[in-house]
Image 1 (tube, rainbow, N blue to C red):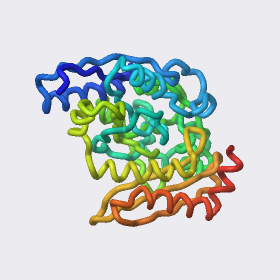
Image 2 (cartoon, one colour):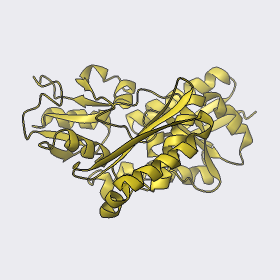
Image 3 (cartoon, rainbow, N blue to C red):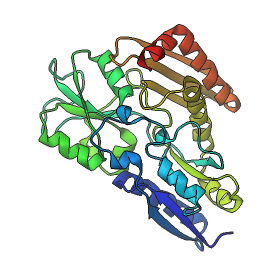
Image 4 (spheres, rainbow, N blue to C red):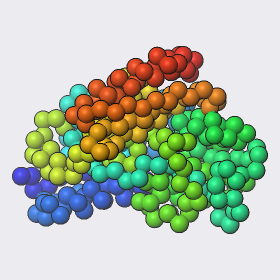
Length: 309
């Protein structure tokens, strides 16, 4: 057993909350292990004045952490699983996936607004989001909305919303809950209208494949049902070769002993959405993910993807 491990983390309030949660949980199991946190800035943290879809999407929030792992400056990295590309570098792997928080997105109205839901907003008003997946589904729901691109950490986004003339913004409920902003949520968006990002709500812990001692430590935090679901979603995304630049939503879960997966591919303007679902054996969640990806492509998803690319 190692006597000391170093966790790599991004420096945002949410990233540090997630990393400190992992640290606290690990110390419950391994009270004698000294655990330190090293903050590492990623490309996605440095470039805040451009939409994510314009900067490129492979490893924006993970690459520098992965380099530190491979250089053995840190022993594990904590990521929001939705930020982790479906192909990780050789020598590394996602060795634990934590139990998922609520996967849904939420609508947040400005402080004191009389409009508490998307449906109640006046025609043509502005709603902010930094995600093409959300933009696509929002425009499919309300084609009249003006979508504003927003970047930055949660505190920055709340400040921007309250200082602006926007009518609201869309965020992941998981992050809002983790940072204690839950009272600001004015509507939880139904999954029928807004599928989450692949891996949304779960944390991915990345380690070196040759580091058995650290693997044994982090394995304590792996949540099997979440792992099965996330692997199915990530297999679907890998097969579609999707990233930040493509509106793809997915939600996998285990219900009544079966693995269920809903997924969609959408056009940037929200006018076309190809959506389908599949059910299968939890042991074959990745196979189900690939099968559903193939179905989406056959039903018109391939045309949407070609146009976007």
